[in-house]
Length: 519
Image (cartoon, rainbow, N blue to C red; front, side, top):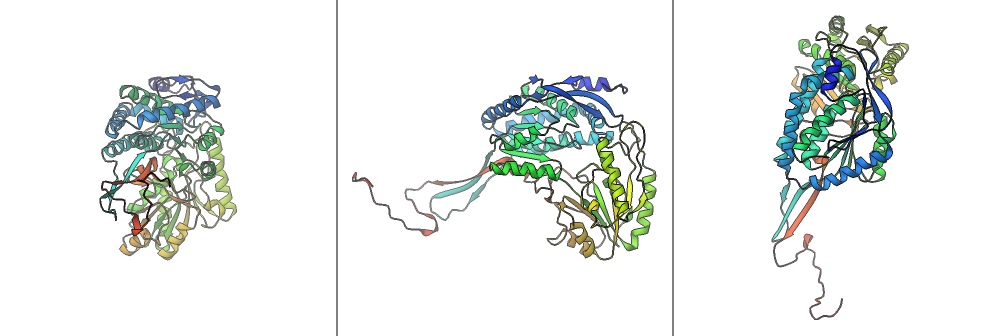
């Protein structure tokens, strides 16, 4: 294990050992697997701890147990399910600093952002607790006399939640806390690049679950292999697969789920743009662009990757961005002065440098950055490149702090360029022109799931539904009515009269059988 100062104590307080088991059934029991893979500290390139891999038979056992627990959990009144989630939020508050430190260690995310991720878990718990008191249906008008027609929502079943490394805890909570108050059980398959965070969260959840009659509601399976994701997507006992990650893997999850008529919820790649028009307040736009482009080292799905600047502001904004980038402290994510930590691993660093080289080869002008740092850790400079929106490298998502800059003349052109990529997650416009703002959020404006005006692409609130269109997958998580994805809809009609009128005024005479004559 790493020898970084105080880190072993933090890991021990969160229940992390040198060799960690492969699965948790959610009742406090943990089981080993086979072999092992390392969780690597991206700031040093050194292992934090080892984790065993789940075996196929054991994953089957986790799914079977989640199915059994679901039959009990769905009968628990929703407000009581909400009490469990509320208590879990209190436990997260108590562990916020240690858990934030672990997230920073395992992902390279700076401590402020890592603590913010734990706070996001607490916030979505509050949303879920409120939801548990208002899971609502509709009373509908029936055309038939003495009939009551209503629509109600029932628990769906076991939900498989497959998460990415960049938000190793928060994205699970978006799904798990909402699913739990809806009456579902949750099987978590986390990224192999951040397994320790999942283990720590599961241990916290186990303790709270034992106190609230919720044992087995949350379970965990760990592996660095592909087959568990495909097995969960293919399993007919899984009612919903919620996947966060690349569009390529999301497409595979969708295919495997669709074959069995299973449900899936996809949160895939983003290629997000900020538009700065001629009326924009640059004092407002500049910090939003910088945070959007380099926050989490450019490894958010909502990271700002493209910047369209009106020609009247282009040179000034580029100069100010270069000046801001020059002041960004790059280093240890646990250092409070650090604004840019490392990329997650060497593969990510190579992808970053490869994208920069590809853009320059296509004719891109390097405006700032572009370098990697030798030595321990996977560090790169934040990079600005003048580019063309049609280039293949600009059309795809590169998980790195690379911002492609492009000028425009008309707002119509900027919106068209914003939409002219395969992804459709987040978008933003900085303007003081009411017409431009309304055009951007209108039906013919941004085609993204998130369209912001005078704030950046990154940093969504949990109260709104989160997700995007096109190759982003179309899923919605967190607030608003995203809870409906975790339930099944039922239309129910009760006839409290003595007659049997048919809808649409249909007359259908059924011969009487009172005489005993068989029909």
